[in-house]
Amino acid sequence: MSVMVRIALLRPMARLGPHRWGPRLAEVLITRSQMVSGLPGSTARRTAAAEEAVTLCRRLAAERPDQHRVALARALVARAAAPDTVPVAEAIGQLREAIGYVEDTDDRPELVVLATARGLLALNLHLCGEVREALSLALRARATWRACCALRPPERMRLARALLTIGEGKESLGRTEEANTVRREALELHRGLSAYRRIQWTGIGASAATDLAQGLAATGAAREALELIKESRVDVELWSGIQPRSGRPLLARAMLIEAECRAQLDDPEAAVRLAEQAVGRQRAAVTAGTPRAGAALAHGLLVLGGLAARAGRPDDAAAHLTEAAALARNGHDDVLAQALLDMLELRAAAEDRAAVDILLAELLPLCRENAGRLPEVWRPRLARALLIRCALTVDELTTGSGGSPAEAPGRRGTAPPDGPAEDGLAGGGATSTGRDGDGLAAGREAVELARLLAGGDPAYRDLLGRCLFTLAGAVNLAGDPRGSADLLRECVTVRRELFGVDPVATRLGLAEALCNLGNRVHALDRLEEAVGIYRECLDLLRADPDRIDRTELLTPLRNLGLTLSRLDRRAEAERVRDEIAAVQETVGAGRSDPS
Image 1 (tube, rainbow, N blue to C red):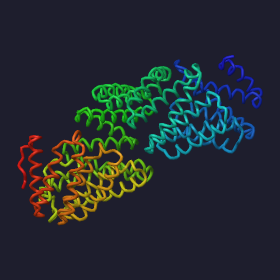
Image 2 (cartoon, rainbow, N blue to C red; image 1 turned 180 degrees about the vertical axis):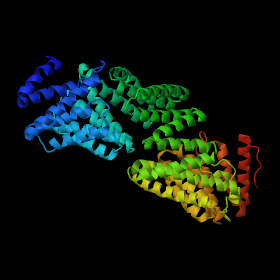
Image 3 (cartoon, rainbow, N blue to C red; image 1 turned 180 degrees about the horizontal axis):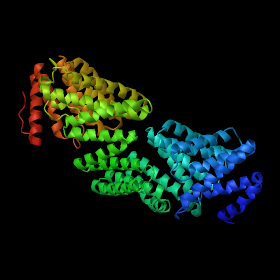
Image 4 (tube, one colour; image 1 turned 45 degrees about the vertical axis):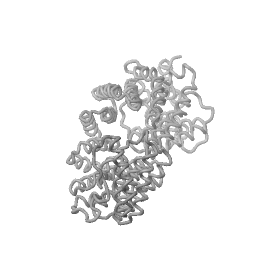
């Protein structure tokens, strides 16, 4: 007998015997509210069935609360899960009420309701930005499902939905590898269903594959992510046709993930084209009034802006990021912060100081406001913003004082001319301004934040190294070579640790820090120590001739030659000059030796 026929038969019977037939009618109505269909009006019919179940169960529970509270909890969960435009806050209230009715129980039917309610509440809280509470509830939902044992296919899919919420929470806290682990589990739960059940739960399978692909792309596993996107494309497209309200945004997100994978696999133009198509779909969703479409469009524009920048289109990137930031100012701080950071990099590269100042004026308060709520996410952003502020100070002091361009924070390497005799303002110091003081204070705060972050997670050691190096340059240009040397020693220590893990990626960074530390030590008249530091820097650069441009040798060679000359070690200085000449001849530098 079909569900609609059963409802039609049970309605009059429930009016005659409400406590006998009412619970059965409520169960059939709840079942009706969970029936997914692509037919017109399906969403409204599902919502109406859930609302009728809640009204009926409230009336029954008011008369016999002990007998009907579980039925009311089940009806509230069904209403909260109905795919309509009910405010998230209302759904959260319904789910909290449902949990209150079944929280203290060992009875399996009630545990199923409790697990379902916790999973849905976690999902809704995550949508509201309550990441920590959402993650805690999703973990409790998983534990409750496991306590149920012998899960039926629908229950396994609700567990999978809770696992995906756990993944979203962990990724929001920067724990992407952990997120991918639970996403794989969710995807395997869907793959373990029969063919019929897999079709029935296409939405869960498509979401699990898309979420996992997103996490894989974020960790650099672009090929695996791309294969997963291709494998799940049929399911995603099928879901977008059956349930356009949730399926079409999922399809656009899958296209953005594929675009990111294409960019990582060195096809930036294809990546931009694909992202543009995805953003076009998201604009259509905004026009159609799809819930949360504005937030999705802001994220899509953020991705498109980043891809355009990597494809060498800074003007297009700036336009996309500006639009993303404008949309994100309507309560989407995560996207706003990332858009501002990406725009900062573009404006700094274009040497647009006025624009950088405006962006920092918005970004710094935003990061401080959110740092207490989610320190794992916002402290790194705050440190990056402060680092940029300090780097601007270094650039301004360098430009204003004729200081060494080799110590500008935006570069990596030792190639531009630099040396102890031209070492910033090691002997005097720049004329300080309030703006410079702000930059130094920002640099010191960035270093403290980076130390705190690196102490908890080694992944932030690179950030700490960059903060130390930049602050060292600012401190030196402000007239404190000794303080600069102390910071550079810490920077060298950090970069040595990174070099031990990945020599290829970090060799130039370590050489850069060593070269500048040699300059500071020279400025402090500790010439023998400076010689040792320069030689270590040169040995590091010579050890990888296939990857290191020989021009990188010129600065430390010149610095070493000048230091040896001051020590009256003329034979060694002469050999250094000969090597400089040989390098210049090899690279065609055509510059004379500054003897």
